Length: 70
Image 1: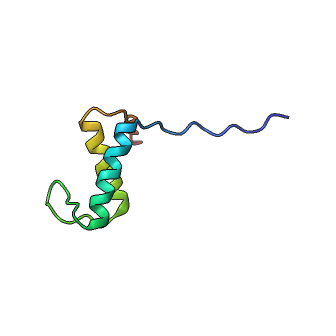
Image 2 (image 1 turned 90 degrees about the vertical axis):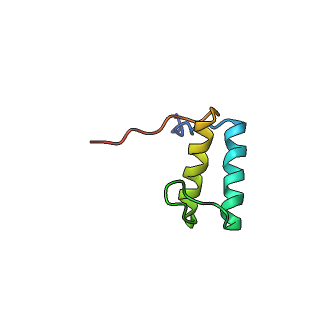
């Protein structure tokens, strides 16, 4: 009997993980600001998204963005 295989998780590079950790440290200290308005980031999900975005911008190994459904 074959067991169900878990779907493969997204793979992030070591550099991307370090970048996200740095951003999360800023968020925990209340120092993280959003890019547009410069307001303080309070959402953990938004902080992670900023970290991933910055890692992607600097060329770290980050999976491509998901395409939105129409």
